[in-house]
Length: 265
Image (cartoon, rainbow, N blue to C red):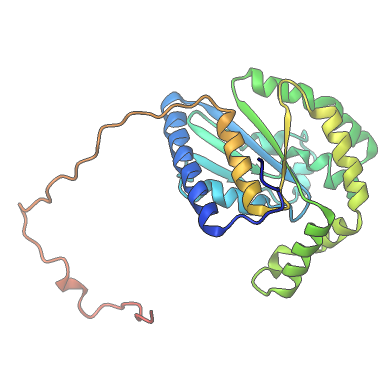
C-alpha cells in the first residue's frame, strides 16, 4: 500500500534514500563527462516550493564543473534590449555539462506576467514561441527536463512564517515573496496557462508535490535519473603512488612562527 504523501519521512530513512540517489547522480556525472552529453534541468514553482533545498540535495556530492547551477538576477538595462532568451542561452551546457536553472526563461510566464514586468503582448509572444524554441533546443541534441514544484497554500504560509521568525532564514523572504503570497490565484492562473501552452511532447512538464520536502526531493531526483539513459562507467581503481624521497625536505619547520588560525573548536 502506498504511503500517505503527508506522512513525515524520518531523517534517517530520508538520508539513506538520498545517499543512494546521490551515488546514482555521481554515476550520471561520469556518464555525461564520458559521452559529452548536454543536459538542462529547469526547476520552477511558487516561492517557498523547495527549489533551493532540492538543488542543494542534487549537487551536494557532485562536481560544480559538471553540475552548474544558474540563478540569474533581474536583467540589466542592456539585457532588457536583447532577445528575451539571449541571456539564458549564454549559460547553456557544453559537452559534458548539466546546467540546472533555478528559475529560468519561464519567469516571463510567471512572475513577470503576474507582477506586470512585461506587457500582455510580450507574455503571449513568449507562450507562442517557447514551444518552438524548446523544440530547437531538443533537436540540437540537448536533453531538456522541466520540473514544476507544487506546494499548497497552507504549507507555503507555514514556510513563509518560519522565515519571518527565524533570523537565519529571513534573507530568503523578499518583498517579491510577500507580494506573490498575496497574488496566489493570479499565479495559479499563470501556472495553468503556462502548462497548457508549453507542456509538449518535445519538452514535457512534470509536476512534483513538495508539501513534504523530503519526499518531494527524493521523488524529483528519482524522476530525473529515470529520464536519462545513463550507465555506470567502469573506471580503473586509483592507486596512490609512493611519495618522492629524492629530495628530503622538512615541510613543517618553515611553518614555525607563521600565523595559524586559533583552534577554537
